[in-house]
Image (cartoon, rainbow, N blue to C red; front, side, top):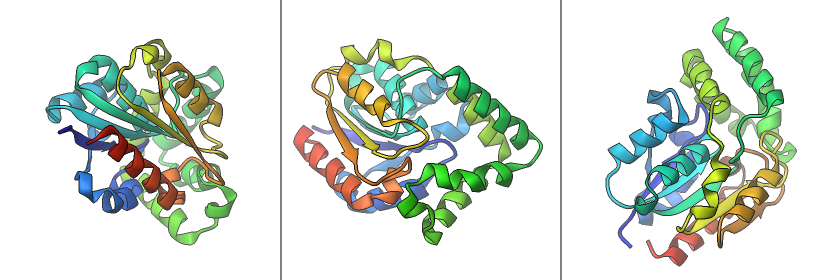
Length: 234
């Protein structure tokens, strides 16, 4: 199967969060898209991804990137040769999380980014990894590098995301769902829900891992992705 492997970062993410995967999956020549940095909604991001990357695609999205991947599959099911959904949710935003994000947006607009982002390290990572200075530094650097305007825009995109559960049962492509067992930002039940809705989906729960699984447990994530890519024949 001649399909391109596209990696879609999570909110405020960039190539750094995929650094280990770019190396480990180099056989498949993965590319990291930045559509989330250039568009204001999940549907617009997905449309740009499809427009800018012709031909059949295997889309691997983490967190918000998974939302973009699911929307791309809804829009162009015939072009999607596989979906890998990491640490993401198909649900629309809850009222509780909407308020959390709105409060954060207010602080971002006041220039108080660090006040929000620095404590978030302890929610983004498993306790085993939250105190790893290199992981914390890399995470803080790429989120702060994105800047306040991107944090505002991308959080608003997540708030307004569509309910992807409606179209998941119609997916015909192979789907791999991966999730950290201790994810505090997106509960593991969200992964279980996606896997239950998608015909023949594979569910892989990564032990002792939080939300940033590509950075926290790269060996396990890379092994699972590589095995899946070989299995689907790209």
